[in-house]
Length: 231
Image (cartoon, rainbow, N blue to C red):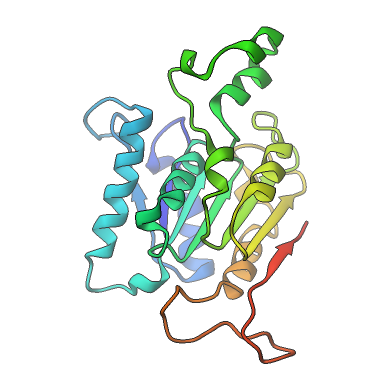
């Protein structure tokens, strides 16, 4: 798993969540610290964070001690926008096995309307926003099996945005999970959080060209699933 964290803080503040992934799902994790965050040099920018994500995946693809056919990317909030951008790029489409995004938004202009509640923002051209992160538009180009998670009590990013992202996603294998009581920063502490991720990954088919097609238990035929699920 390549882990892209949210806007506030740094990757050290996500260690408890990452420890859960490691111990409960038995997976290895690469935590990415964006430019300008934590101890990383430079200044953050939308383009810069996209490049950081691409560099992380390129690095993993050149490792010889891991199974590069099962690389998944995870992003929470801002990290979700970064993960969606990475998965939407044609050059990386067949390199990512699974995408998991949590409590992420459709775009920065959409979030500006939610937070500021200024109706005049509806008429503001996108070029007026310094950062855009047009995740909803990019989701149509995401063909990677995708899990969209949101907390029902997220007071920052409206849970309705998760449904929009799910519906727009171009993947055949996709799943939407709403965690009851989950807030923006603590959805990962909900009871069924890790088991929901695990159940999704069990149904993710292999990358194109890899050995071992996904078989349906009942028909024993090759089949991809589209799943909508609320825990």
